[in-house]
Amino acid sequence: MQERVAHILKHHQLRVTACRKQVITFFLTQRHAIGHAELEQELEDFDRVTIYRTLNTFLEKGIVHQVPDDVGGAKYALCSDDCDEHAHQDNHVHFKCVECHKLTCIEEVGIPTITLPEGFVAMKASLLIKGVCETCGITA
Amino acid sequence: MQERVAHILKHHQLRVTACRKQVITFFLTQRHAIGHAELEQELEDFDRVTIYRTLNTFLEKGIVHQVPDDVGGAKYALCSDDCDEHAHQDNHVHFKCVECHKLTCIEEVGIPTITLPEGFVAMKASLLIKGVCETCGITA
DNA sequence: GTTGCATTTACAATTCTGTTGCAAATATAA
DNA sequence: TTATATTTGCAACAGAATTGTAAATGCAAC
Image 1 (cartoon, each protein chain N blue to C red):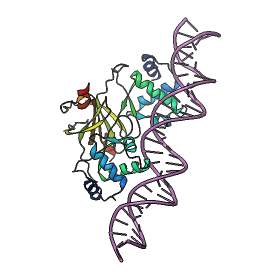
Image 2: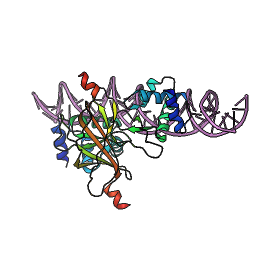
Image 3: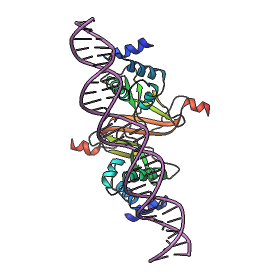
Image 4: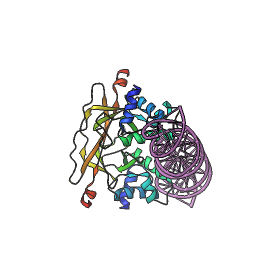
């Protein structure tokens, strides 16, 4: 596991530090998108600012992508393997559960092409679906 | 105009106050979605907090709906006539221009139905498209 | 028009989110 | 082991948003 984490960092020309390793490890163990607040609670030994900077560095290097959320600031999720510094490949649907409030990437569902009225030129789209996730659906 | 504004408020069981009238009037004269910051600049005579509470009240009562935005906090737009306290009818696409940064409701384009993986139940979807709007497209 | 009461507002204080500058610490390569 | 560029922690700051409370105001009944 830790070898894999170090590999990800080196592959993106980043130094292997304790904070970065713990952030990536947490991303790998969670299936949902993560925000700064959640990381700050989880990684108690690191400064708020360091976590902000770690997330921004990962975003720039293409290790994570931003996930749209309606409340509570930005969320992040690990990119799939075919992302790099220059081109993100996150054209998939995101799902927010109204029960557990967790945000999940639905990688297997892409965003359909939308035809806009005359004059509008689309460049990028993000689709957030709210509802009940598989875990909460079983419990209810 | 002012009669129409007062009617909207009374129809939603709200008292007709100066701040609420000015907020609705501003919504009616703008075609794009509006955030707190823009209202605060426009309505100089009212306290920041009052504007926050006015927007929240309007949201609860179904006078406005929230429009997803990637940066700079929540934006709001007037609901169409068939919205009420219990059911919002804002299943349309939203467009954000990368030039002028304005957010527009594209009421004439609905969000297509998305088929989610087994176990996920969709209740509500919001779709934000970024690109160049009709006005900026002409100018460029 | 005046009165009474519930709603709404302004103000102060606080919390949460995110950024910047800089000195100390540390990862990496030589 | 050492040199150096990168990263971290700390302090300070800026903006977004919320909460409590007393004063002001809308509105209905008289």
